[in-house]
Amino acid sequence: MSRLVEIYTRSHCVYCQRAKDLLRIKGIDFLEHDITDNPHKTAEMQQRSPQQEAPGIFIDGQAIGGCRELFDLDEQGLLDQLLGLFPFPGGSLQSV
Image (cartoon, rainbow, N blue to C red; front, side, top):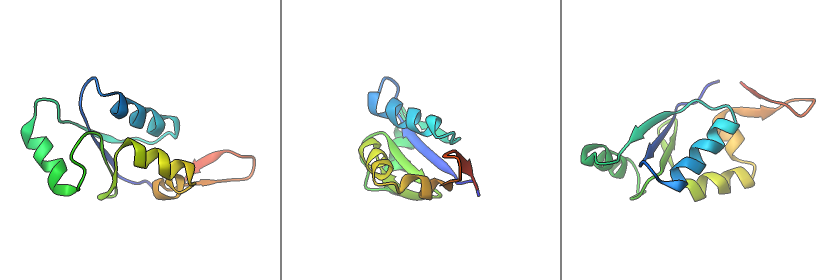
């Protein structure tokens, strides 16, 4: 089952880039909202979550936080579950 992943980013933001890189490594497509010089998108992100700075990351509409929280979830082994990825025999990951 595919999850809707959204990420609010700013250009030249190293944390935004790291978060996007992790999602790409996992083979996850995401919808990117560039909030650079866009106060309406910034306000939208802040209304949807307590996250005040980019990146703001959402999975199926649920705010999960920023880059640190994304990596924390990955280290705890919870991110794959949230993304709908599950390990299969042979060690490969597959989208369900």
